Image (cartoon, rainbow, N blue to C red; front, side):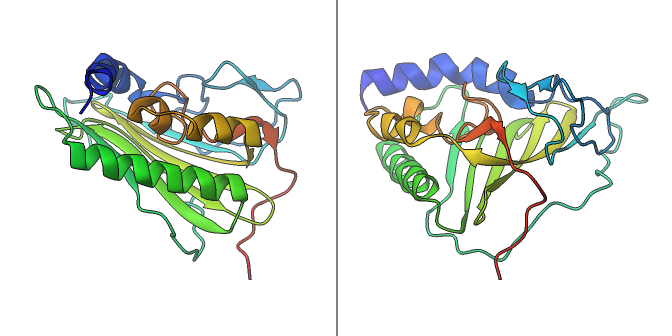
Length: 220
């Protein structure tokens, strides 16, 4: 493992933990499902403006009474299609005092490149990407479901004793974004293009300004 990769991983460690709730601070509802219907739009986790009437759901749950209150579930079922998974999942583990092995870096690199190429090409598929610490108290897990008209991104996150879920229906970013990502030679900037909580927002491969008109439908 190169010094650059090692430095990047541990420089981002506290940032990855702090970003476990990325994309939720601006989410209204505090435990209720919600759909963005503000005619003026609303700010998203990347400082962009979400279009009106996006197909969005947001849920956040924490503890109000007691030290470890039971976590609840949103009042909406996650969107799930039966889709092929052509790429391995990307999962980055941040362990205190330990480094990723060269084998783990190579596997994560290959999986991230496979997912980015598939998202760029738009073939119907499901892709998984995540990061977490050794305890699981801080984590971000995203599922990209590529449909004929757009992508459903489903995020599940944990920030210590607070957890949340968010779903969006968006277009992917433009081809230039994917080409720039695939040109990266170090793992962390490459992974940040697809893995949530590494500086690219909750759904780094999606264009949160590109709201899809209508509801997502599974391909027949």
